[in-house]
Image 1 (cartoon, helix red, strand yellow):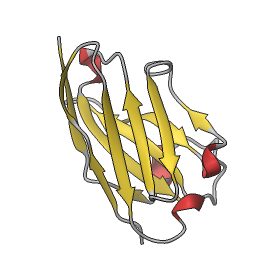
Image 2 (cartoon, rainbow, N blue to C red):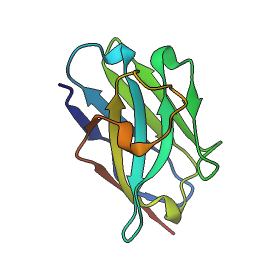
Image 3 (cartoon, rainbow, N blue to C red):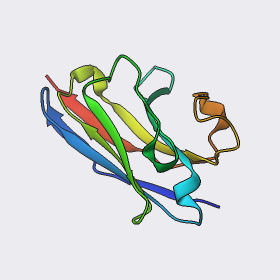
Length: 126
């Protein structure tokens, strides 16, 4: 069993930065594939970043590429999402998710994630 707790959300002006953290409990964190997702009001949840085992693989959709950076500190059982050049359209609840590596790290489907955090609100004002 893995528990995930996000922190670091808040309100920031457009062009600003925030760093989200996701602290994980449980064993074998370093083997897990970790993802960050977000859901804006009235929209479906979408993937914003993935990081694989040992950070050898990362993925970003075009909407955040070059602005967001995912990283992990396996010694601290924590994954981070550095968000720069924030835009009002980045406003959403951001969720941390974890899955074991039984599926390919290139499998980006949301439904294969086993564990989810409670979410943290990010609001970007114009």
